[in-house]
Length: 100
Image 1 (spheres, rainbow, N blue to C red):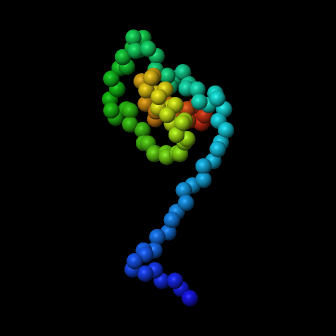
Image 2 (image 1 turned 90 degrees about the horizontal axis):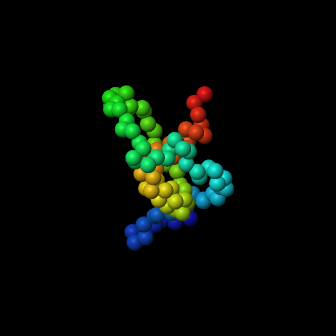
Image 3 (image 1 turned 30 degrees about the vertical axis):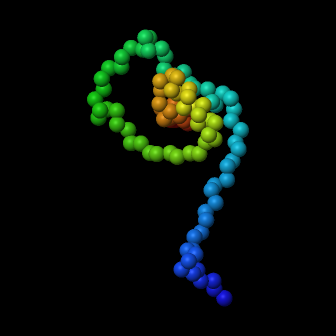
């Protein structure tokens, strides 16, 4: 016999969140490459103006889940160094997966 939901109790299916996978991360993987770290502001020469057309690269969005503690460390360190999290993570990915 089929169970028919009554008007009082709506048919709701709960969806379990994805499992958290604890992947060990080598400490050196958390170190920022020198190219991603901003040197002291006094020693940074101002970059020449580049036309907007020359800078445009087609981008894709990548969404990942990371532990809250790791997110806080990355955000804090990027804030201290005055760099964007996206730029640092993009640099890490470029270093790990260089164009051949």
